[in-house]
Length: 265
Image (cartoon, rainbow, N blue to C red; front, side, top):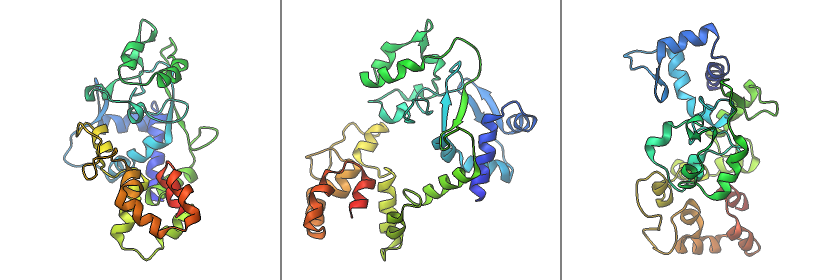
């Protein structure tokens, strides 16, 4: 529950930027740079601010941005498309120095810089971006709490967010049963990482620009994705065939999402 309260404080810093307490926090712990607000380097920080920093990764998952001027929203790493994805997650590649690029920076002569976008994004993604043209006013972008239908923050949804961090798919009974299985903590941790797409596969390493190839270094026959590791690699596939009921084979091997695969089990 403490994390949920920290998320509430972090949310209010965004949603109420002109309030007195938010201005005090910014003056004490943040500095404005060309790349936006950055933490000040300090020897000691309060427990409150440490708590806020710990939940920023959770906050970023819960926020969408309603584009106004486009100056407050990061083009690549913030969620501002209708489906809630970030462009960094679906881009073929993009220069790391562009991470601080704002939505407003991607506009040229009051129109999207489409040539720039097409260098890194599929055409269908570019078509999805076009309707989000920033307005010509100077109003700040508006944060929206995307976990609630009305876009307003609630402590209940913040708590569910912290619960999802601890267990894949939150209160799903299938996942509750999984966490009770008599497996070692290492096995639980491995499948938790896989369910959250956090295994450092070659596909993920290539997305992070850590390697030039996505090919599996063991079999050399396919891209090393999370699904390849936990299901499609020949040795792994043979083990699943032995384990599964024959009636489940077709469904199990046709699923294209790790969470759905686990539910078949």
